[in-house]
Amino acid sequence: MSSKKSKITGMLALIIAGEAIFLLPFILMRVFKPVIREAFVISDAQIGEAQALYGITAVVSYFFGGFIADKWEARKLLSLSLILTGAGGFWMTMIPSIFTLKLLYAFWGVSTILLFWAALIKATRQWGNEHNQGLSFGLLDGGRGLFAATIALSGAAILSFFFPEDAINITFDDKVQTLQYIIGTITGVVFLVAFLVWKVLPKEKLEITDSKEFQFDFNQAFALMKHPKVVFHSLIIFCAYCAYKLTGTYGTYARDVWNYSLEESTYFAVFIQYLRPIAAVTVGWIADKFIPSRLIIPCFTILIIASGILGLGIGSEQAIYFSFTSFVLMAFGTYSLRGLYFAIIEETKIPIQLTGTLVGIISVVGFTPDIFMSLFVGYMLGKDPTIVEYQNLYTLFTIIPIIGLLATLGFRKAIKE
Image (cartoon, rainbow, N blue to C red; front, side):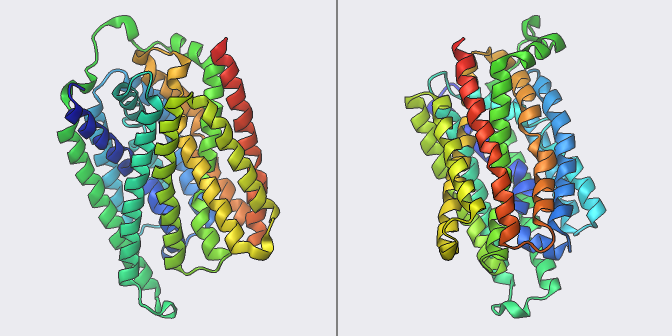
């Protein structure tokens, strides 16, 4: 960008767009899952099935989206993607059947990824330089987290406003109507952000050259796939994203284990969301003082310790206080990873003109948890989960950050060769 002002407005547009696109398919479910389960009369397993369909269509979209991002302007791609996703929000306000909800998630897998994801990451890499990638991606994910948390807090306020003061008197119709207001509000925000992106992102920001030097080449793409540093990078994102998907259980844990009310469990989920900007921006800034990939090591270590504590039930005699602290640690480690795992692209020394293609490749592996993680969580917890089911879930999950730690060590070795 040519000026400081345009850099600031450009990053703000990327931040807001980067989270607005996922408000409907992800943030809504992550924060309001206890209410959604009851309003839709749907189980965790059925939610997992819907999100698995999202993951299947998204994985295909990641690969081809990388090619699209290297050829077309981000302003157009991001705006169109937001409009299509918002259209799905109108569909959801009608509280459709479980079958229709699954179709909606499959549609969102295309609308949120094909034209959007690689374009967003490439634009963010170009926004910074080789010495401040940690800050660039920390600002992106931290800002996205702040925006998501603010939207979630607004939704929680709507929930509190429409629910009767006496929780016993909350009817099924109260839950459905309140959820419709929340979904409708979020849908309106998505359309507003589409307009904002179209107006704010400058046309010249990502002009694509007509040179054939960097035309998409399947042979070149497959060559990148075989590179050890690309393989390890994909695994790092895969493990970090599994941890991120697990944050959706924090609110339901508060509801099922701590016996929080719907409002209390929702506000706990919102509190966790506000840790995201703190973690991502702080760790991203620190990463630029050192090396981003080095900071990934302690992040995975924190996840191993915290999930192990929750899984083994250590300190169960002080369950709420001890598990609360563990959730905070897990959230901090998870959100720190989100601010770092694309910042290490610069360490791979891949040409910036191939960023879209590279992001498409590593995202195919890295974001496959969209296919299975919600299913895994849903079937691990069952219909009426108790602390035992949650302990089993977190114990098994501990394997993931261990793999992530090993992949990080492998990545650091590969980039030195």
